[in-house]
Amino acid sequence: MTACAWTRRGAAPRWCRATRRSGAAFVAAAALWCPPAGAQPSRPLPVEPPAADPLPVLPPAAPALPDPAPPAGAAPPGDAPAAPPAAPATPPAATAPPAAAPPAGAALPPAGAALPPAGDALPPPAAAALPPAGAAAGAPGAAAAPSPAGSDAAPASEGAAGPPFQLSIGRLLLSPLVLVQAQAVPYVGDDAYLQAGDVAEGQGFRVRRARVGFAGTLAGYVPFAVSGELAAGADGAPRLSEAWIGYAHFPFAHLYFGAHDVPFSRSAMTGAGEGALLERPFAVRAMAPLRQVGLHVEGHFRDRTFSYFAGIFNGFQRSDQPFAGYVENAAISGNRFDHVAYVARLATEPLGPLPRSLQDLAVSRPRLGAGASYFFSDGGTRDIHGVGADVLFQASGAHALAELLWNQSDPESAPTQPLGQLAPVTSLGLVGEVGYFVRRIKLGVTARFEWLDPNLDLDDETDSWALTAGASYHFIDNVLKAQADFTHRQEIHGVALDNDAVALGLQLNL
Image 1 (cartoon, helix red, strand yellow):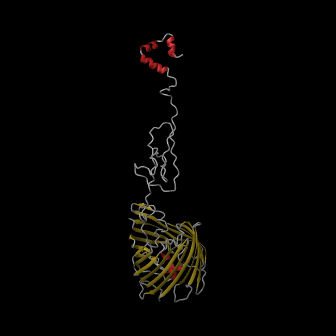
Image 2: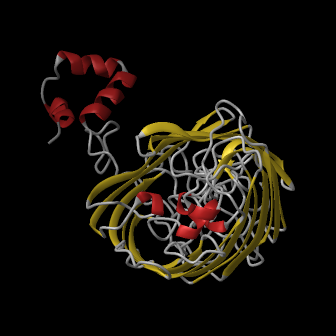
């Protein structure tokens, strides 16, 4: 019996008599107290909110490249139906239809980003812009200007894009120049002498080079470098190593001015830290002028298929000791005692540019380089003619080098400096080197044979041949490597000398 039925039998309360006088109020009360059977309350108690729509599951990207996105509003290709309309802002508690699959290869949105409405395709990823050809590493959009051959600042060409460390300041690129070569000599013969080109005169340790400086490029076509040797010579006094400015705006004519390597002899033009063995060949150190002050222009055509070098330098000074070679004069006081020297070189790399290193560290396809050089030094003490020819071949980790050097020195009748040479002297040197680099274990092995006759008109103990065998372990290419060499020297005439040596080295080259 409902409450309303009870009010019909008994005495009706006061509020019930009031409801009889007002039909509308009675209907409202009856609806409140006596809802129809099966009806739901208009305001139910709070329940757990509906579960969020599940995120659409994207299919794995297909290997095929995505088709270009159709224009906005265009119908999808083929017979595929158009994308369904966007879901309402507040969907009912039901499973939403799966979103349309993005095109194959499309990138997922970043974490935390709002997903597009159901049915909208994910946008394809934006293509990354490629840097311009020749851009230097660490400075997108800035082209790395070339450096003169043989400079410590020369960029790598075996796929690397410049020095391992660079600082970009507007249009200026700067990179450090650091070359530290520490050596240990566990064995050396009693007749070894530094003046004869030997690595040491006794067992112990030696800092072969401690070179510090910086190189840079301004506006993409003005390269420059300054570096000094902190401990050079027997007295350990610091001296200038290189200081030059270049202008490399035109590929057919790069101009370099200052203290830099003379373009003569491939082994001499190879950086001091880029060789396969601890030292350059005896013949190269004795007969190549190495680093001098002057200017030269060089040009490269068809990706170095043909190159030329032409320069003028201060006159070359050399020691009376044949193995001491040429004096590397920084010319702080200018050209005081010698006139000038003229240099020319022609070179070709028909199979593509060769890297800086003599070793084939990249285990590359076959590459070949050949060159012929000439210089004439119209000096105040000596007139010197020099001729050189070289060939370098690299392929699949192997390298082979052959080089010939010839010098003729004529003393002046009125020399500007003290001179011990009284007659013309003709010198000849031959170098052959082979090696192999195993990239998987970062180990290289090299053997070099050379023959040197400092004076073709005189037979003495300076006429000799040398055999050097070595191994190198490359922690980081030529940046950080350890080396071990054994050198046997044999005098052809005169007294045989005890000057064999074993040397170990550790190098940091930036």
